Length: 235
Image (cartoon, rainbow, N blue to C red; front, side, top):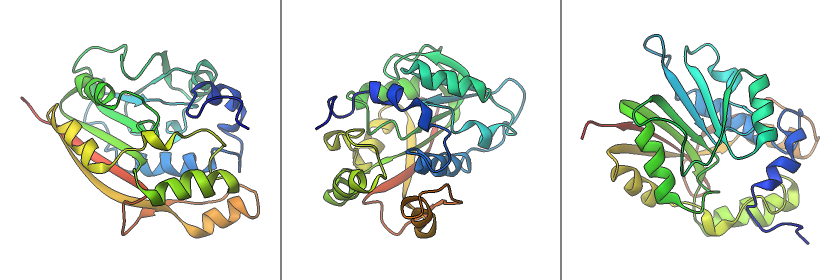
């Protein structure tokens, strides 16, 4: 029996020791962070800002350290922010539906594995778009709202240890069409593609129970996981 309701953010505080443990509960999140970073171009000049919305323990940090941005992370969980700070992230304690940043102050907005946890998707997308400067880039990844994603992420995933029990509420999973429409309301054109973890990496992690060189690679279907890249246009 779960001790908390599904999707309770306090679970991340309880799991703070897993952020950087090789082969730990958040192993797959490391692969996703690397895949997000591959979609972020080098900063085109000095003083550029990258917002890591829902930064958790700062898993994106080592992958963007040499790209030339000031890496700012916003998260509700203070234990995660402390881990992120140790990796060079400027942490801000806050809610992604009320970002503590000025409008148009960010060059790249990254929202990785956060959109399937928010209870106010329109408000979150509005905030991510608000802080992004015209011409700036959005990078996201999230879980699709399909029967297959519920089966893999919750029913099977929690049983096999792919995700800690109770971490996801499948009622909050996000269909790509809805996300594209929400970003378009704020002048952001989002393009999406399906992705998946490599099977060899999953085997080493889940069967052999150790860290692996797993990766996130393109998939023929976006039915479970998908990435998105968008640009904010002048309005």
